[in-house]
Image (cartoon, rainbow, N blue to C red; front, side, top):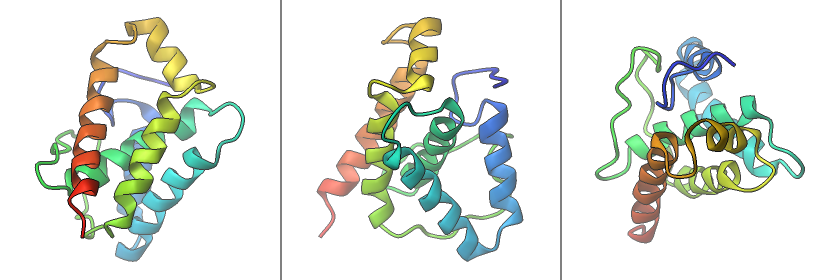
Length: 140
């Protein structure tokens, strides 16, 4: 995986995911985000870093649409407008991030080795988790 920074789209795999989103129909974009989250959640053994990277990117896009959500401001993210995601994706995004941070996650292991457990990548994931948690707690 080519990684050049700690941002959620600052690697080859996430940038490819953004291109896939741009190539998809509007409904297809929602499906791609949902599928990325579900693949990470459904990993029962070791979570591959490629699947984890895509799940983090998808979660960042979901969190962006939450009240107070951090904007995805990168040239490597999707160029095409994204549809309004269903609120149910917020809980999936949170679960996917929890899986990425859990044991048996290659991406987590790589970032712990590179930056420690309190590095910028982990703080970025923490901000996404906080946004999603707050948005879920205010849902009707």
